[in-house]
Image (cartoon, rainbow, N blue to C red; front, side, top):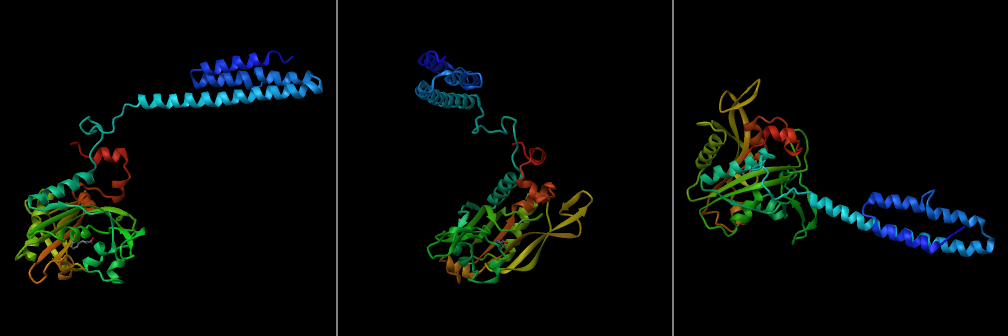
Length: 348
Ligand code: PHE
């Protein structure tokens, strides 16, 4: 017997509308459409009808089934939305609160090192400048005296992006912070002490290289500036950074297209069973690159290279942080392992 089909439909619809949880809704679905469900029973009852009646009654039951399925879908959507809203309301984590002040989390050793380096150079009168991470060829290479096709470009393992600059050259992720000096020097008032700090990128990844790393760059343009001033500036910074009275440094001749002469700077150190001790011993460790700014760079920035002179240096923040805090694997900086951050991170 089919019974009162529209009565059954209205009862089920009323129950669905009243269901207040997803579990209750599922129970109603089973009680209507499950194996032993009330509507399934109506389908079974079709068996007892004559073929003529079966057709019309079958259509009726089917129509009721569709109405109920629709109602189920609508109610399920509403209850899911409600559940999500409640979950969001229950999540009271305020991402804008400072976690360190709340005793949660730590400052990453790289953030701390970067801030310390900037603060130490600020004491020597350097002013922080910023440039974009996505650069054009002219700022990253051209104005820094890397002619087109110069082999020094290949040393940089550049990441190119799918975008072109005004000259039709592909844009790139800056391979060093030296490009910020071009931005800063164009239209600078002299004398100038310029500092740049931030992310740099090279397509290189192994135990001592990560595709993204951090550099700090310093540039000084002042009358009568010499390599002696450069040396003094770096010695002062390195002694302060490593918290020593003094650290011996040594200049080794090197090559960068944007400086002439160029040097790599080594710092005195001693290697023992516990790692590296800075400022003592007879070993040397390379820590940065530097030189006197090449006249072509000054000219590219609109400065008169016959009148102005300056120096520049660039250092790797990861390397200095590793040396200072005895961190042996560069890749740990970027894995964000809570235990590692708990050990090497800073409170405050
Ligand atoms: N830009 C150089 C590098 O990334 C470092 C450097 C900066 C060297 C400034 C000299 C002067 O290797």
